[in-house]
Image (cartoon, rainbow, N blue to C red; front, side, top):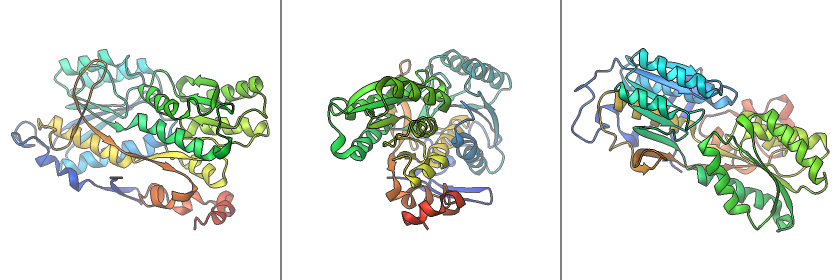
Length: 365
């Protein structure tokens, strides 16, 4: 897996993307970074919510640092968080357009609802990088993870955890993400490709706003409908929901494998204790650094040929220059080789007093 080397210490982050080159030579060869705009650019950054730990802890600070590094300290990031409200995010785009940012990085709350705002930005001459979620409208670039592969990884892991319990009559509960998030559909598609026919998906939910409390309520409903002794496992699309699910399972006295995604600290700690079987580790530092690189290049009038080797079609735009970052299954066996090795967390972060005994038991020292 190609990963950026990340060190997080004393609030500083160093992300090496040497393979991508520098912003000065990121174009296809015809434009230099100074031929249209200099380094004093303004990058609008719109993130979707602040309940998931990753956005404030990784995405925002890494993008800010990368923009500074790529512009000799002269670039500015103007930030806004929609707090899971699509209308708020559309208003934030309008404000960014009014304030004449040079480029937008948008992680859409609702990929369809954002399309009109993306069009407004384009009409104002502001290029748009779709970040993490494939926004509709005339976007100029896109970076995310292989989201269907995320679902495949989760589905395979759940089957592995079930072992000989994985059979067509075995009942599992499927807790998918929000229907407004296009990624959720890809996760679901990949997971279904692995699980369908091998287990009985007895209950399936599309969880409103990805909220743990909604997943908790759904899980309580599933337990009531299916019976506590008839559930062998739970597919959870992310770690936040897994937390809500596991709370409901524990209250009912049920211990079964539960999947996740995002490698949130609480999720990793649940993996250490065995309450959660796995998560999907995605290198947010690499994704964030790529988005910053794309944004700086577009703002400076450079091409993306040397950055984006892939092309992705959205429902409204064909052949969008894209960078797809790979993912990996995170279990007790590879915590050291993933989130610790990449500097996302330290052993001290994970193995607090509450988790010390569990960490010792699995050799996480």
